[in-house]
Amino acid sequence: MNLRRAGRNRYTDRWTWRVGCPCGRTRSNRCAFRVAQLERVRNLAGPVEFSIYGLWSLCKNKDVPRKVREVTTQISPAEAWQRLLAGNKRFVSGDALHPNQDASRRSALVDSQNPFAVIFGCSDSRLAAEIIFDLGLGDAFVVRTAGHVIDDAVLGSLEYGVSVLNTPLIVVLGHDNCGAVTATKNAVETGEMPPGFIRDLVERITPSVLTSLREDKTDVNDMVVEHAKQTAARLLESSQVISSAVDNSSTAVIGVAYRLEEGRADLVSEFDML
Image (cartoon, rainbow, N blue to C red; front, side):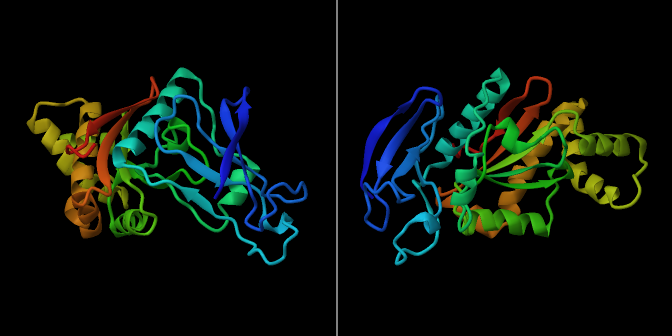
C-alpha cells in the first residue's frame, strides 16, 4: 500500500496520510478510500497503526470485495504495556483522548479485530479497563469476573486471545478495596462462609489471603496485590497455550493493581517478561 504524508491535524495532533483505494482510483473524489489516518497519538508509546476508514460499498468499482480490514504492525509485550501505561497516565492527569471511538473505527472493525492486549480484571463497576487505560473499540480483549477468579470459561477466553487473536500481553487487573477479596478476608477471620455461589469465589481467593497473612500483611489492599500476583502465576500453571506463548516470548503475563482514588495502574508482577 503506497502512503504519502498529507499533513497534520493541529486539533487532534494526528498525522493524515493519503492512500489509493484498492480499486486503483488514487485521486477520484468519488472513491471512499482516498484517505487513511495514521493515529499517532501524543505521548502514546507503541506501534504505528494504519487503519483504512470508510465502507467498501461507497467505492464505485463493483469488482472490489465489500469488506473492511485493518492492518496493524505486530508489537512486543513491552510495547503493549507501555501503550497501556501511557493511556493510564492520560486518564490520571485528566487528558484522556478517547481514541478509536468514532463511527469510522466502528465500521473498520466489522469483519475483524486485532487487539493489542488481553485484560483479565475484576467485575467491579469502578474498574472499566477501556476507560482507565484510555482505549477505544478493538484495542483490548476484556474478560472480567468478580475478584478476577479463574474458571474454565476464563481460561478458554484468554487462550482465544492468545492463540487466535495473537495478542502480545495478558494483564491481570486487580484493584484496592476489592469486595471479593474483602469477603474472603472476612471469611478467613471469622470462619463463616458466605451463601450461594459467592462461596465459590471466596474459596478460590482464599490461598492469596492466607499467603498475605503468613507474611504479616493484614491490610486488604496488600491481599489484592498478592491475589493479582497469584492469579498471573496460576494462568501460566493452568494453561499450556498461555505458558507456551510465554516461553516463545510472543506473549507476556503481568499483574497490575489499580488505585481507585488516584486512578493509577501499578505493575506488581511481570516475571521478567517485559
